[in-house]
Image (tube, rainbow, N blue to C red; front, side, top):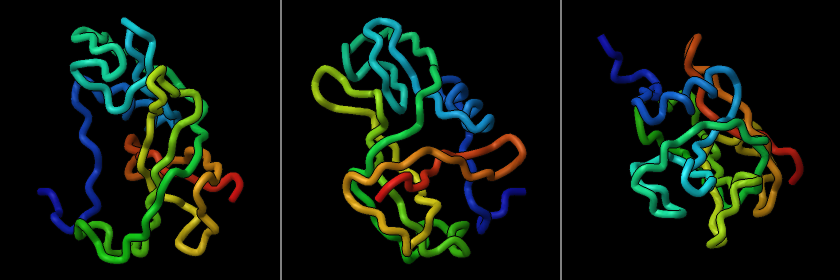
Length: 147
């Protein structure tokens, strides 16, 4: 039986399974469109860059560094499983090496593991890290490299 007060864990589907398998290994792997070569997250039935309806995504490891574009501090749980973790800093990170021809980049939102007192700022450099939620389950999170 599932405990409704436990922290939720991701459930991979056919499209996202390679992403979650890489995360479980401590690796950030993003989807690359086989039609145009653009990186996307999450992968969708249509490539957001070239609009191919058959992107045939492949997953490739990326450096896992990026720049903070925004952040927020959660002081109230949005789900019961996060009560013991509060407060939580969530960062919106533009991932290095994912710039598209239209000027957009892949962004991930994740927990800043440095904590609520960390000197997070716009443009701060972060590196991916992973929160272990089980033996074979991990979610991407971030740590400050420089403020």
